[in-house]
Length: 335
Image (cartoon, rainbow, N blue to C red; front, side, top):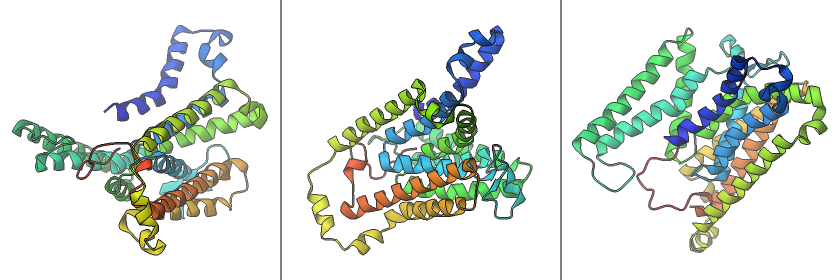
């Protein structure tokens, strides 16, 4: 539960700080939010939230960073408030305002989690190998069903109901695929939510301070160091769970094409196609701040998915890319 609550609390924290400062009516030169946190700090802050959860997720660093990058790419759909360009709408006026957060959240997380809860109650087991009571079974089924009904009702209440349902179904397919093959969905959602904020404040920061002034400020540098340190720590934890190299040696004798054409590679293959599509589409944008987010995010998605495919060819079960854990067969994949 903390894995879901903490990131959204971090997103709301700057807004709560600003409200508190306005409540006390502090002068501009004494307002701690305005004095210590300018546009570069805010941009780095919102960029670091998806990255923190990407490098710390139980599925591995590569998958987490790929999911977060895909979320940033999805955030570039629609009208750009910084440049006025319209991106990736494919002639659909409903996409002018971008992808709606509610249906994306419902399809990506709410409905799959609700289905997993209901199924766990039905199967009479949970994440731990113990039988649950009838009350717990009923509670899981009721909670899962309620979450699904809430998500569906929330989607149907949108003004453009048909568009909202289509978005929810599209991200439901994405969410179920990621859930089935143990890819984290929370970094994708956080990247999608924080992407417009990163783009907005990065535009302000570069326009005000220039790129050299942006990279020389201590707080963005500190956040970057924190992300790198957490990535190293996470990698070492993953590495500590690596068994002997027997699996990897066996994988070397497997033909590359056979290793690539396995069902578990469908997510990185689709991610690679999506990353290339976002990168290719960004080539038509001339303004720096129109192409920067989708191009960088698209290249990151494509590169990380290629790396994941290479890992799968080298090792069919890359234990270094997953947390050390007990038998995970039959358990609910991480969020």
